[in-house]
Length: 333
Ligand code: ADP
Ligand code: MG
Image (cartoon, rainbow, N blue to C red):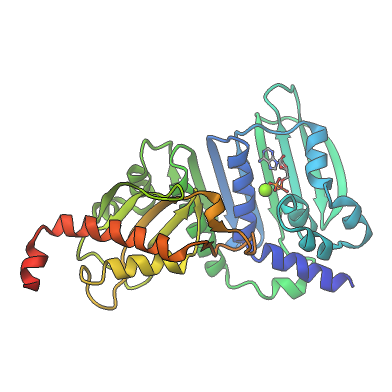
């Protein structure tokens, strides 16, 4: 059933921010040092991702879109099968099946670029084009052909907020890559290559937020645990959890364990009802992470949640104690 299949595609892609995530991650995988993202109407009407990465040859570009997909798309937009194969290796064909999709790409060692146009999963053309080295993907009218899915999208403002938040996370995870984000013709942020995470946070969240943060010294532990990051100074709190940011092995994640470790670590250091401000960068042996979770989602589980919680809690508290000196202990006595 075609409708059911298209709804399945919608579940995999969810919303415009998911398109941006998949495409920007592809750009980063392709070694891009510059990524530009533009969107309109919360990404519903238009998304453009442009990078200076490796690019693709005309044949590879076609394969990237056909892999597991084009035969199915030709037959019945059979996205249920794609879902059962998992999302990896499926981003491009999935996105192309529910949008007007234009890919332009050129490898630096090729004289010409190639352009492929796909409309709602239907291959329209491939032709030679002028193109700087790298890849440019345009996704227009997302879910237009899938009304059942489109109606689940939130307002333009809400969808835009998801994209902006996602882009901030990607940018902070990769300070060495230059990022530009443009919303409805207006630059949301433009950040050149930054020498450190602190610089990137200042670029994206502003000097004021950067001024509220202190660095965590590098901490290491078992299972390849390594923690760095920036945390709010004692007394600095937020009314929402939006600025409790955690990246595990370079990916933004939602982890109750990390959130609770932070909240617990701060409980005597910020007023009740406030949430810490934090950018945690955790490295861990991938084998110590439970990967049995939907790949398009951000939730993460650690094999040993307790060990990770204690590790983060200990180091956050140590740093906060250090910053408040003995005054806290004295008060307690
Ligand atoms: P996956 O990333 O899981 O391999 P995708 O559908 O996202 O699957 O991408 C398919 C392939 O297309 C990638 O493996 C890569 O070879 C190629 N590709 C996609 N985006 C880019 C890009 N921006 N630059 C270079 N190659 C790309
Ligand atoms: Mg991908």
